[in-house]
Image 1 (cartoon, rainbow, N blue to C red):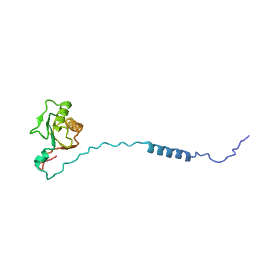
Image 2 (image 1 turned 90 degrees about the horizontal axis):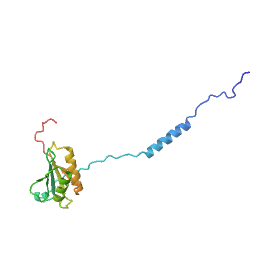
Image 3 (image 1 turned 180 degrees about the vertical axis):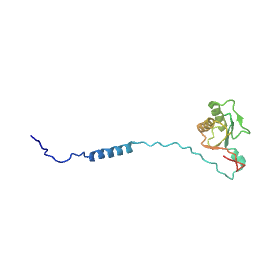
Length: 150
């Protein structure tokens, strides 16, 4: 005895529900993803002004860093930079507190040797910010020989 199929149709898999689920998952992941923002360093370049040099000098806090990472701090009232006894963060922090004397409107100039360790410059910037200094700039030298190779 031979049995026959009553359905001669080909069996097919319906992909419409699968595509719907994939689109729903795509939308879910797009909505639930958090995008991280990289922190950016905001640097304000100094502006020239018509103020006399003595008036500008009374608003400048200088932090000098040698190639070995030794700090020297010169406040607005100081005649010369005072070399610190050691390179610890606490010593630099106290020297900056003394030099600023609570004034937060000072312009902080970091003068670092080109061979200064990067960590020493970042430490100076961090501690200057902690004592309330927000106007931080870097001192550079003008290149005399323009034909110099990089």
